[in-house]
Length: 116
Image (cartoon, rainbow, N blue to C red; front, side, top):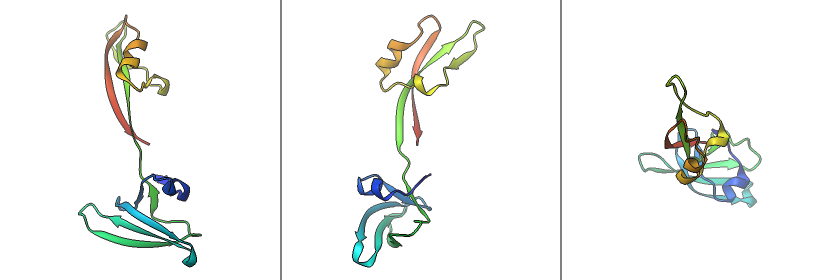
């Protein structure tokens, strides 16, 4: 998981704790030198956690970002199935992937999902 980043959280990126609960709101309380988070557990219950602004934010993380893309699947001369295995060959749209495919060995284009 990505370490907590206050600037990213202030921009609106999601924050989670070490149990996977999502922060539904937070306030920076500068007079008290702390940040108060409101978390929602998977079962729907809400709870508060307070962290010092100067703390290491143990237990806080930036939520993973879900990504989607399209890749081409190929077959080689001995009928082995493969994909290129390199990040430059993940396309934003199916149309872009098909357009860039190597038609002579291309089998199909598939959508993939991952988290960063």
